[in-house]
Length: 153
Image 1 (cartoon, helix red, strand yellow):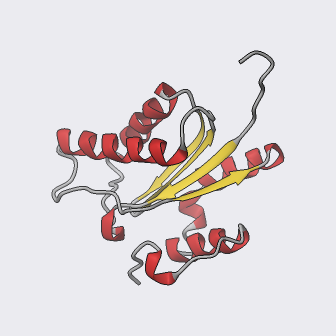
Image 2 (cartoon, one colour; image 1 turned 120 degrees about the horizontal axis):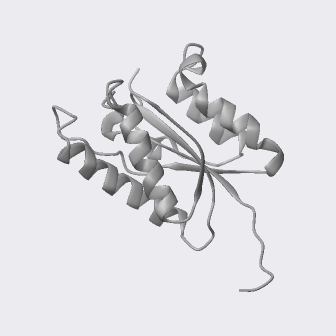
């Protein structure tokens, strides 16, 4: 539509089933490139992606023409099939149900990008459970513990 302008940013977070450390250092860069292609093919702009063995962060300039649940489902389904096709996991790779989606303002873009790109340093100080609960609380998202990701200490 003419004269329509949008600027939306979405920070997505999800993890392998049972929070297993299945995203291996040997191939996580290739996974990130594959997911980047999915995002770009759906006309979103990848701003940052960072995978840890037990979770992934994706920050995008969000294309409002696709619903976030549909995008996340496409990423998860396609990435799982890619991992299986390339025989990258010794056990069946699946993503855990659910995800976190957080929106940010333009003034926060650089901060969120740096946060995602520095995940390894960040996780020297706090684990994923602490990080995820902090995000939920920071965004004042009401949640029930039984519906959170499965966290194993």
